[in-house]
Length: 120
Image (cartoon, rainbow, N blue to C red; front, top):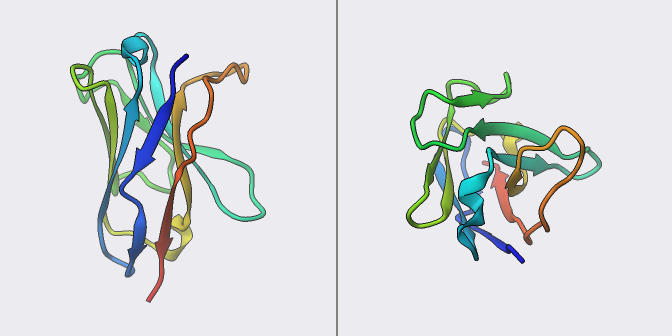
């Protein structure tokens, strides 16, 4: 069964950058459109960026709140998903997770996530 391990989070000042990684334990990640999700305390989990099965950057979509600041990418050889986060804002503070894109809630097992805290 696939397992995700997210990493790269941390404490950063507003305006700073972080690069998150999501390593998959199997190559099955290649079969799915993938997404980065985040969940802040007291809020529902939300999708912030999605990427299609291929590796071309043209097949990506972003939530309005992160558009122009975040870049999602994938390396299907390394079975890894990335999220480059620039111009970070306090509102980006959340736990970040990766998973397949699903409109029906049919997700793969969730990883432990990686915490991003944006604060001065």
